[in-house]
Image 1: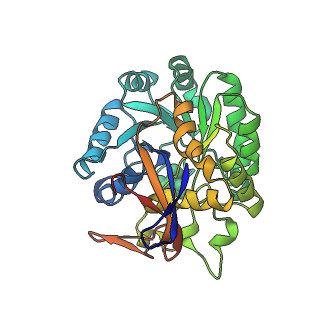
Image 2 (image 1 turned 90 degrees about the horizontal axis):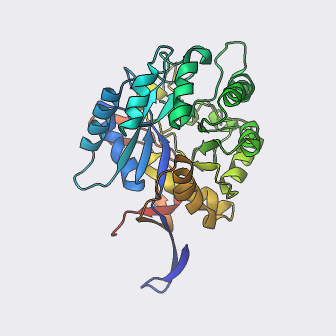
Length: 359
Ligand code: NCD
Ligand code: ZN
């Protein structure tokens, strides 16, 4: 709902009020980094699907429960936020460990990282056949599978890895497990948009704030731009356009997942820079800016607050979130306790400000 309000100074300002949103894909890290980044997500989102790619990865119910406790302990007193935990699939993970964690409510879903596809994925799955029994069990208990959709073979061009994954891995898995609910995470290509649109009701996709705004040129604008580097890597402009259309389409198969993935500035600005974009501090503002540009602010609520819970079969949040149309300068670098991170939109002035409830 958008309202035009008359401000005391006589001008007008616009606010956008939506049902409290969720982030269906985020990296909250651990230790000092968790302390640095957790509340940026918690202040904007009521719930978040938390990625398990820690060192070591979250592979047991006990590890999932302990990580959930560490996340809650990292938040300021009184913050209402529910971390939804995920299990990291490995070649040897026990299906009963997964099933037990799902039944007890510790795990909401499992995450499939093809081995060595991205940050901390060395213990991921080397061949999807190795987790066939796990997928069988997940289908049986109706536990969602979240997929990092990229093949890793060195002979496949990095810009083609997502499209090849659809054919080589995802289509066969969905054929073998027609009732398994699957989220194709952080899609970056028109091919994935079509795959999800034309697929059965069991497939959905998350779209990040940054893939709606950058294309592959942004990594090379006037020099190498490590802060625009993430995985899956941004593709051609035409793919970005397909993602933007999908996000604002009102199709409930597409919903919000930031993939906010903080790395220390020194780890990004390096001879072998890490993949990941830290979008949590301005995530809703960034999505709002894109939806605004697309003339689709009225579609933001579905994308951010309704379609995710529908797919995950969870209740929608009760509260509200508010965005106000107003210039917001974003710092170039964010610093706390010896950690330096360059946020997404760093150095820009955004057109929206998120207003925490009660302000
Ligand atoms: C993520 C990370 O840093 O953990 N990086 C990224 O570029 N998105 C991992 C991932 O989601 O691929
Ligand atoms: Zn991710």
